Length: 438
Image (cartoon, rainbow, N blue to C red; front, side):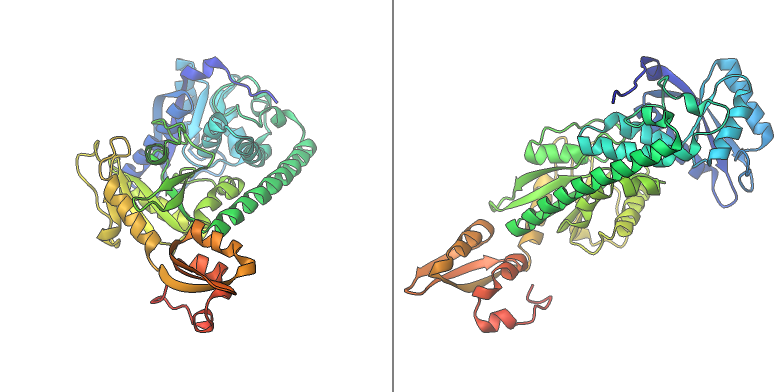
């Protein structure tokens, strides 16, 4: 299926619209619009103007009031603007009413924050799985919005809010779209099974898994490239990386860990998007250690960390050993801090220059080594393949070959101990694993 991409969209001008309701400060609205502006820039657009209405609550029909709808319409008409982006989520009827109210007889495209994010995802999806996930999210979100006077039903012309793997499907009737959604879900289930198999193989290897998570554009890909020469795309754009990349990284002691770069988080990340990218986001859930990256040069870094922390909890990935890493410190005027976080787990680095990375990796190694213990294994001569597991996943200190058994002294973690528990003396095998032990 060809991806529609119109060069005209590269200089697409847009009007941004936000509502300042009771309990929300003007500063908060402006900061949220700043982020929408960055999203629009990533999508290839350009902000022409911002419109903010102060109103106790959203209008059910058009979000903003009728007078403001006319004002936006006049602004678009006078300046030949064809795109209006709302900072929030619009219902199908609101999109229809706004396009009719703002455009009149002209064709005006009205999209919301979620549709803009989906558009960026469509631009940046590289792998087959990523493209399937984007198409599924587009169909599920946009299908109910394909109604109205026809603007939404003619979205093959290109431009922001129209492109991506799913756009040709958006011209199908709902029955066909339902079939396509079902087919995509089945394909993703199969891919998820493959990913689960790969995770199981990693678990058996005994290598610690570290997920690099954080707000979009915090520098996760740059850090992975610096540590492992991964060679993945690292741009100063929102959502430059959608597909997880895993690379082996050797700690100073020589022990290996697996580092995974994950899709970035953002405020108001649509729930359907989290669901569509579940298999990708599960990299954080199944990791042994989290490395939360925070952009120290961004004035909003503390609130961005709060968004990241909240999403980690929603995914059920909290409670793991965690490093809190402020990146881009070479660009920061002041180094921020985090409340309620142990200082020994906070690091200040530059993934671009390498500053501070040595102390961060030393702490990472300390966490990986924590809980490891020297044990004696008695392996029957007929089962010496178990010895290979120890050589691969533990530090073997001594090996003694006997007539019936191979006696091995090795420093292992809880995972390897569990894998080879049957070769331990009875007292070690049944001993309760307390936090003091492991």
